[in-house]
Image (tube, rainbow, N blue to C red):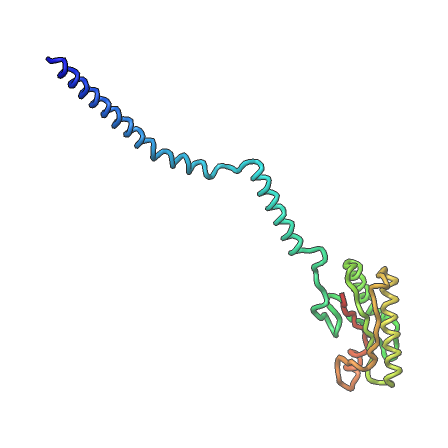
Amino acid sequence: MHRGQYYTHLFLILTVMFGVGLLTSCAKKAVVAPETPAVATEQIPEAPSESAATAAGAESEQGIGEAALSGQGAATETYGEEISEARTSAPMLPIYFDFDKYNIRPDMKSRIEQNAKFLLDHPSVRIEIQGNCDERGSNEYNLALGEKRAKAAKAYLINLGVNPDRMETVSFGEEKPLDPGHNEKAWAKNRRDDFVIIR
């Protein structure tokens, strides 16, 4: 074998070996390549860093607090949008009077005590006590009687512990009858105090 041929032969063998080695390494890379995305996807759902978790926790706590405030807000409760009876704001009840009287009847005391309990349980609520009369008697007399009825209810509520600054009184006399009839049944409905929430 000639020396030149020997080197050529050696060169070819080395080239073939180098090519086979190169193909083998490419094959290994081809096998590794699909695993790389799998590792990447496994890392995506990992738990966030402590600072990120703290920030997310603070955000969720803030959201819960805001929802609690807006949903159940300390003073977001509203009253006075519904009527319980006569023109009185729910859940309070009106009280009724005997003809030409302004004292609180014994059968009305439980009603006014219920109203006092509501007011004591809701210290931000303000009311107007509206005194009313039936149509009998002059306008002036009935306005004065309605005022006495409203003031009697206010005094009773004060005695039960309600702050007088939360209550206003007004007399409508016979001007705002609940029942326009001209009989005892209608008059009995019209002789009353209404308790109206004004906020």
